[in-house]
Length: 435
Image (tube, rainbow, N blue to C red; front, top):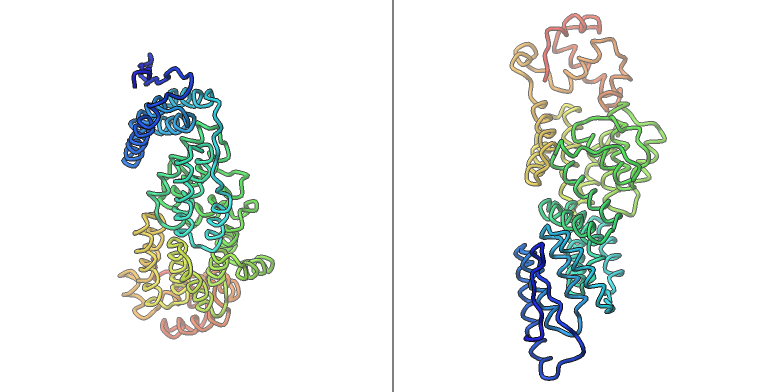
């Protein structure tokens, strides 16, 4: 290694730029061995999140080899960037380009398309595994300019598959490397992964502002639904996977869907993309006047073929909400407990809280139990609305019930409270309480 020039620059970076005039007979095998050892050490250091050490090892390796210096310096630049040393990373990238070597990139197009197909069918863990192999090949070849986009895509797959820490790590790496390579699209996609995680975890510091990107619009709808808000119910067209969420927001806002909205929802339920179809069946279960259970059953069966734990938990949440409004408290509690536990395992705190609030709503308060010992939640919900003078049809719309079901509950309310008219019910109702 006598021909290798090692120096420390003013900012503390290691400079390895030996003079190169041609191959060195008798030294090539030793240099290759040294380079192999240093590359191995860099991979070990990178695996332990020691990116600064990995960058140093790769830079030294570039100084003891004749061929492949651009690849080694490019990898060193990526590790320096991930170590939080952007100036050093930029200089290493400049030196890599100055070698004049060609840097062949692996053919990853088919593998990325395969991962996208898996995600379209809800098999997000399988997609993440396929993308992990792509990431490894990009690191191996030194094609770091393509890394940010692939890392952002894998982060999205991991987030949808329920691995929130893994998704967060990929998003941060994608953002850092995209800053080095100038990949603005990857910055945007990695930002969407971070927003998805914020929506699931309920991070108020990262609420979703209105944007024109269809995925951002969809994430905004999801943020609203976490808290049962309807502020973006009239939003512009979101990405296809969020269309059922848009219709659910409108259902919450208007208490019913228009005939056009219902037609759209039924069309989405026939989608070849299983995640979209399952989500559509879930929302249909909230609005269907009859056979709501059949809608939720279809959604559940679709989820049995997918790897979307958050979406599966939402089916239980929506089914529990519907059962509670139909007056089946025991069945509602079973569904809501499953939803709450699933959300809690994922770390989706606002969604777990929403399920918990619904669970509290399946039991009467002590005062209500004293005044109306046999009134079910559905009967009390009907009584509260009818007592204000609202018609049977409007009551049915507000509670996602059929008019016939409202009349059935109302008849039982009259018998239990000893009243025979809506006017008498309005006189008795102020004594009732409900949470």
